[in-house]
Image (spheres, helix red, strand yellow):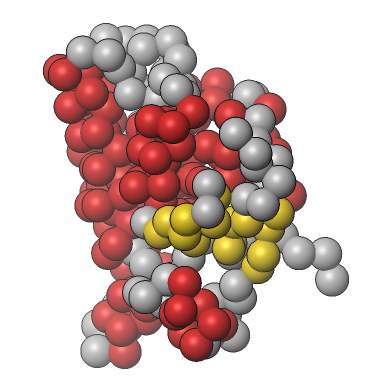
Length: 212
């Protein structure tokens, strides 16, 4: 397939965009990055809303289509590029999806900056307290899910899955908000192994951040 016209509408610190960068890198796909500055509100500009009706990032233009929502994008890439990010058996696929969703659908939404800022505006908490509480709570659950798994190199098995692609950006955010990680030994061990993989390294926000 021709990936010359593949464009990722990205924000360097967005967890969702970070996931898609990892996926594209794992596949060795060539793509152009176009930054959508969330701090300035560019995601709500008409140009971005035209390609992403939710006014969010990421959007991936690939194969002459525009795709949104990071998990949907990753599953598309998995299906069209035979990435192997989901196990062959139905039980394995369900378990990998459960791990992925525990991050992308449980921790991430409540820790989205617009949610956290609204909570802070109502009083009774700081943004740091909010983030630390919900990230810590979510990672506790995730650690317990890993404890019921196969005890493998990565989240499920010895090859990276969509769960691993979701995990690394979440740990980046946990560190950003100074969450104490000692209570999550399985999660930390897996993350350290993943962070050594070139595709994960090159997707890191420090490398994706626009040069001033």
